[in-house]
Length: 288
Image 1: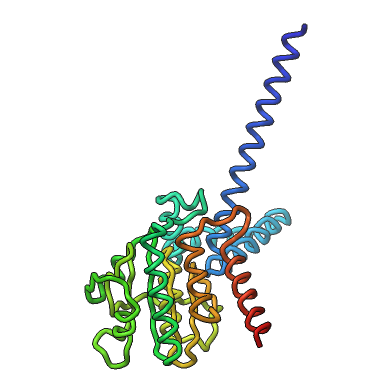
Image 2 (image 1 turned 135 degrees about the horizontal axis):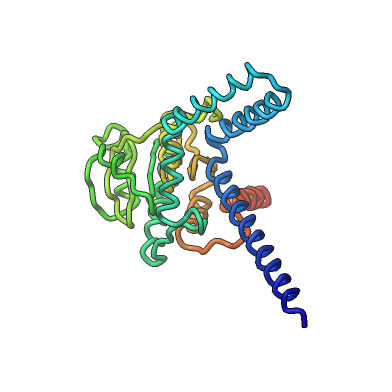
């Protein structure tokens, strides 16, 4: 037996395996980063950088000395300014790496027994507030802390009940302005002021309450339950996306998908959200 030949085959196979692993890791990192910046300002910036890269390669290939020099200076400017301009996106990226969800894609799931009643109370309060056209903003935290934003509110540290939530958001009460923060199954704070989303793609019809709910979900993994004062519409914000819930039952189903039920592999939460919405809408049409 030719041991040199066998050694060469084994070495080639090992190198091929390493190359495949290398490609798989890079592909997964690109996939996760693209998912992270999807729907944010960074997505538009990435398109601009790709165009600039193509332009830079063409300028170099065509020996356009002045254009090449200008593009090189632009890369230096971008390298300095990007960490400043896109600080929220970078922070979110590093936080996901720190808590491990960047690689796993999973979020913390609260204890089912402890959370079942909390989600029911939140959904019930949202339904009552919606029917009475009372605005509300309820933040449910998960792994990423929002202490710097919650600190702006009033400490409550009470059990989560629909009656307490309704009393807080009742018009002209001392705590009705701002958001309530629910953390670890407790109503932690009320009257909190949150960062507003500056996403240029948001509808002009969205008011401050919706922008605040979206804003906090852009810088953390929290969920925001929003009730419109004008229309009574119940919405749920997650990672900068907004889902319109058909009623309080629909809201409760989506919240339970997020906090209690285990996600199915290969199916994104966003897809499940809209599948729930479509099923709910179809059911209402069938009843009509």
